Image 1: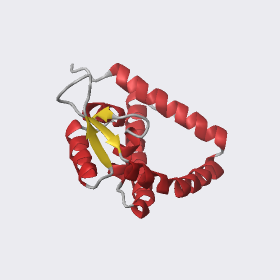
Image 2 (image 1 turned 120 degrees about the horizontal axis):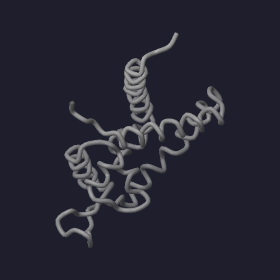
Image 3 (image 1 turned 90 degrees about the vertical axis):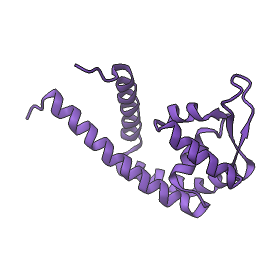
Image 4 (image 1 turned 135 degrees about the vertical axis):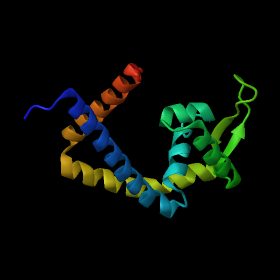
Length: 150
């Protein structure tokens, strides 16, 4: 049965919403033993390689700046992150993971690896890699087209 372009778009969106819920449920389960929430893990993960301003984290994660600011403030209060001066912008401080924050994320890694192995066992490595590539292309395409009002 051939589906229309609109049906394909709607099914992609609904499937993505379901996937988001599934990934968040897994992330909550993985993060809990490390004393984190999925949202805290998401923000800490964004700054593990290098500090970023709140707006940069929001762009990278696809969430609102206000949500990131609220989570960053909580992470700083709990000693998992810190604010640093931003040489590129005086008012937009950089968020950086502290050693405590990095250690909390590291505690997630062993169980994260188990879940990854289970997913590869279910789908196969090549199929998972192809899926990741397609999801990345889909995200890039959605960024490129934006939303135009008619």
